Image (cartoon, rainbow, N blue to C red; front, side):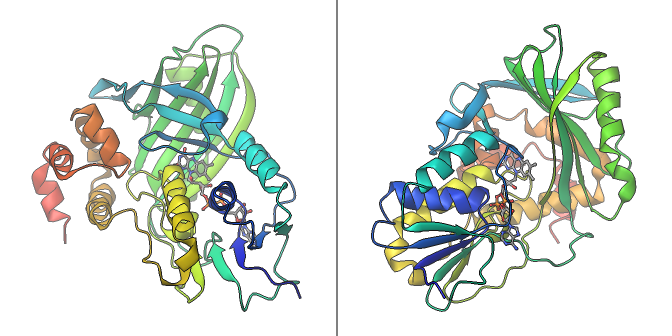
Length: 354
Ligand SMILES: Cc1cc2nc3c(=O)[nH]c(=O)nc-3n(C[C@H](O)[C@H](O)[C@H](O)COP(=O)(O)OP(=O)(O)OC[C@H]3O[C@@H](n4cnc5c(N)ncnc54)[C@H](O)[C@@H]3O)c2cc1C
């Protein structure tokens, strides 16, 4: 049986980000690391986007960034400009390539498909594999996206559309998200905030085709790439154990109200790396109790009043752009929080605190 100082379960975004951070900070020169990953091939499977409110290691994997974005709904539209915090998009294929080529140069790092040949008793474990419980009746952000290419220049690639509520809501919250990478290429996603027990919502291809044809008025296009996913808007129950830290989505790095996870994973990786020598005794990393509290109220409002959400989102983005971006990226101060809270319909939110 082989023994390693550290074992990372799951070599996806969180597992690889942590391994990369440890490696570039020379924490694996005299320590060994095993990464356990079941996938046989790494290729583009996700498109990670976020407002760059902190530095990260992957600027060279960014395929596009924007300073402007819009929100559309049947009751109005709003455009936001913010030069301070660009919205960046990372191609996961570029991320995997960069990280794997770096890690493969270190003989102390080895990859395995499972833990069968490993003795884990003396290893410290970082786990990014979600628990297998059935969470269908909890709230998820689930979506499908297609990257389309058109023969003519159609998109304004200087502005992306964060949310377009001009679509059927089916008693849930539904919007489209469009990232124009070029004037003739964009990722368009149909996104639902709902439970996962309603199969009628997952006719994603029909929704996408209708939106592209009828709302974007694009008839001729080819699809270059597809991605589909479901992000839990709750903290999955992973057991807390001695000698083990949960990371990534499994470790509560998802911002519940938005699904944004990527930059929190990077911050968590830095925290672990900075404390790796005393990892057994370090205080658990948390993206913020304040956000957990506010997001739970927000999600209660969303569950109980899905029809009100387009207006609530639209109003939220009418607060100062800097405040909204920092709030959604869990970097806001109390004054910025108050600026957002005051834009919310007070009575609905008060009713949903309890
Ligand atoms: C399609 C998609 C798009 C997203 N877009 C964004 C975005 O724009 N912005 C953002 O902030 N967040 C986004 N997210 C949310 C989040 O950033 C990603 O889900 C991110 O990949 C989470 O990282 P993770 O390491 O927790 O999970 P993953 O990246 O899924 O990694 C988990 C790894 O564990 C492996 N695994 C699973 N079971 C086992 C097992 N039994 N043994 C060994 N290995 C196993 C899997 O193969 C996988 O590689 C997106 C999520 C999805 C699904």
